Length: 178
Image (tube, rainbow, N blue to C red):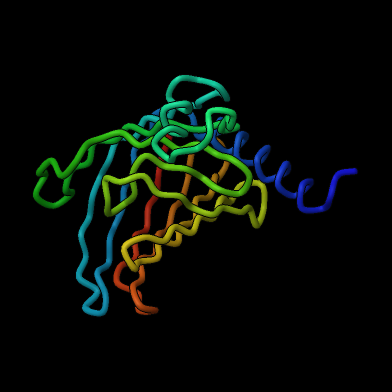
C-alpha cells in the first residue's frame, strides 16, 4: 500500500521534473540584489542556459558521488544551469559557471551553493504546479528561494538570505526566454 507521504513525494518529484523540463532553454535574467539593512542595490544581467538531466545520466551519477550517496541510489532527474553574469551599471563581467541540480524525494542535491563551492542540499516543495520553493542551509545561513514559471516565456525568482534570524539580502529576478 502506498502511504500519503509517498504519494506526495512522487507528486513533488513529478512536478520537479516538469518544472525542470519547462525551464529548458536560454534565459536573460535581470536581477537586483538588496543588501540589508541599508538596502544598497546591485543590478546584474545574466544569460542562463538550462538543460534537463535524465535519471541515470553521468552528471547525476557524479553529483550523487559528491554527496556520498550509495551507488544503488539514482537521482530521479536534474538540471544543469550554465550562467554568465554582468554588472548592469558598470558592464563588468561578474561571474560565470555551471551548477548541477539532482532530485531524490523532497531533496535537491547541488554541486555548489550560492555562497560556497561545496556540495549542498535543499528541501523543496510546490505550493502550486508552477511555483518551486527551496530552503537551503549551510555556514549558519538560510537561503529561501521561490521560482515561478509565468507562462512559457517568463520566470520570476526571489531569494532571501538570512543569518541568525536576520535577513541580509533579498534578490529579485525577472527571467525572459531568449
